[in-house]
Amino acid sequence: MRPETNGCQRRNVPRFMLIGAGPFAQKTYIPYLKSLEEDGRARLMAVVEVHGMEETVREVTHHDFPDIHSLFVPAFTASIPRVTYNRLSEVVAQLHIDCVIISTEPLAHTAYGLWALQQGLNVIMDKPISTRKGACTDPNAALGIADDYKNLLSAYEKLQQRKRTCYLVQSHRRYHPGFHFLLHKIRQLQKSTLCPITSLNSSHCDGMWRMPHEIVGQEYHTFKNGYGKLSHSGYHLLDVSSKFMRSSWGGGQDPTKIPNKLEVISSFITPGGFYTALNRSDYERIFGVEYVRRQDYSDDELWRLMDGMGEIDCGILMTAYHDDRPICLVQLNLLHTGFSRRSSVQTGSDLYRGVGRVKHESHDIKCGPFQTIVAESRKSSDKGVSSHLPSSSIGGEDHFDVNIFQNNGLLGNEDPVIQSYTMDDILRVYPAMLGDTSEKVKRGVLEESLDFMSGKVNVDGLASNLPDHALPAYIMSAAYLSHVRKTMGQNPAVTIELDDDCQHLTIV
Image 1 (spheres, one colour):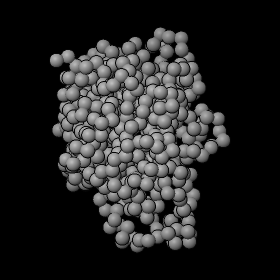
Image 2: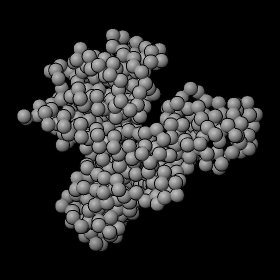
Image 3: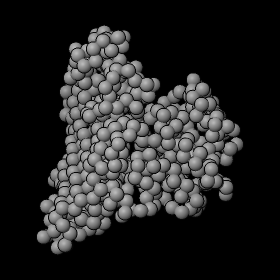
């Protein structure tokens, strides 16, 4: 039977269901869906949240979506309770939902994703694909992350046999003009030289500094479930590094230059290690009586509560092999700890934003003796706080500088040895992109879902569809497994076997 060519059930504007109305949904999905509704392009029909969130949902929807259908369900992770499954399905049928947005705790991503695929829906899902409780301490939990991806991909591929749908992952760097520019430069060099990336060094640090009592009590982007940075913002770096590598493996590349396995070794700093580097005496010296008054725990209690927590900082070393020959070296640093603007123990209610969190990101991409690309994004203020600097300058909100060093004597071109670009320069190359700010690019996934449901873009043209996320999902799983093995005194090297299209992978 020929699959349907579009995932929209009705001819009017696409209808959305939002599952999860937490901080990210409140800052991104809800306001932009309101804008789309005002433009007659989409409708938010329903919000789903766990019991206990009734007041929050009312506060964030009563003004812009007064007639929205609200459904409250029990919290779950492994599978959806049958009663909840049936209630969700009934709402989808009654309201003629076309697309579901999954913006929940990542422990529930897989269960909601499988349910949505069984309903034949289009899906937008926050990163990461999934995570597991105890991923830092349990090898089965670490491997379960790869299993979750495999199960979702299998269900998605099964659905595509009868109906074309999208399953978009909110990995918003895929919609950022700066990263489009980098991918273009990598492919351009690969096409002219057939040289893949031979070395990649990438780092992301968000400067999120939590006090010890906050670490043990925080619920949003928590560490106490046995996972951390990798399952928070760290997925973005796994994703872009995978895109960089894969961009140099295609385009008629010699098959012997394309890796068929990837070795992963990780090192984590967990809350206990961070509290060793910066201990009670240090906090009391820095903050004085302000810190002493806020402490509800003794050191013994903190050590006990921090035991088994997830990673604050993570380093990953990877080697890409073709058979037994190493052909690419990769180093990733995924960090919370770094330059921060926090200068007080006292904070507001949001321990993720608004507490001095400042993002720094860099990429050093080498393609043999032909080219080195150095890209940097370095901000100087927390989100929503003006830096009083030009937007695209270093420290500004949209800073993104690229310097390209090329061996023009070998390449036979007339380009300068050093080519430098700012965000303003890049936007002149990609004028049709959605925008340069991080908030605007986070809307890219919604725009892409609408383009797909309207028939403007087909499955092959999607920038962030599920089948293209196998490699970052498996690297995440392997990084957790490597850490667990190391703590158990075992060989920390984990191997991922790669297939030709990097969709059906295996951890060995």
